[in-house]
Length: 130
View: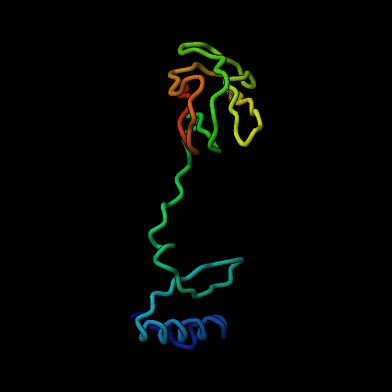
């Protein structure tokens, strides 16, 4: 249960309205969450699917991952090879389109986790960099 601040401590009428609304919702045992958008606060219900979702985690920049399912057409690099940013690592066929995957920064190939002809799903770690 939350406490409603005294009237003289509420800076805006909307703050008091927000606190009262939250109290009513908590009394009904609903699982509302507060979302802030452009400094405005909103109470919203979330679904169990939303609550159980996989939380976003930033990817490791040293892992080259497939962003779409496809087939490996050609691999142009070998482990231990030094490359500069922009050099082509491999060609991936996805939805009848050939995509050349480039080196994102200067570095060395640590491992290659795929082979020519492999069919790979989305988010597969294809190449690891040092």
